[in-house]
Image (tube, rainbow, N blue to C red; front, side, top):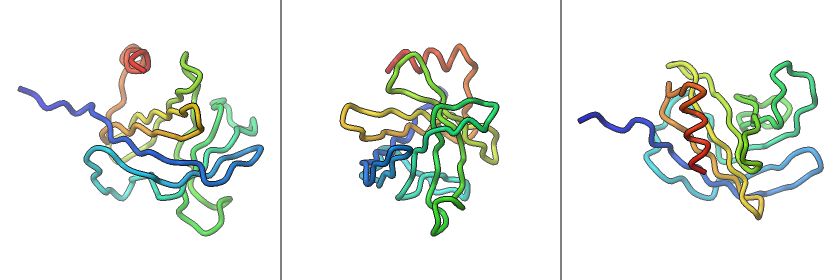
Length: 135
């Protein structure tokens, strides 16, 4: 029997500060086994920013982590791309094992749930569509 390596770790964030162009979130809880890795991009504070239109990838938002004291100098590991569900977005974080799937779900009161799949798990577009349809 093979282990299920596709079970995500869920990080739940609550909004801390809301602006016209961005929302700063603070971690509320983590569900699942969280293995700390050097490329683990989920800090206690994160920011979701509107896209300014400079990227050719055309994400709707950008995911920024708080790894420096100034937000403008912090890392931006992935963009958030839209799906058929208007509250659900996906991104790909580059890790030592390749791209890793991350889903971002905004609930009705603007809380954010981030579903991080195991390092190196990057589904095909058909598999991604199946995962998204389950929401």
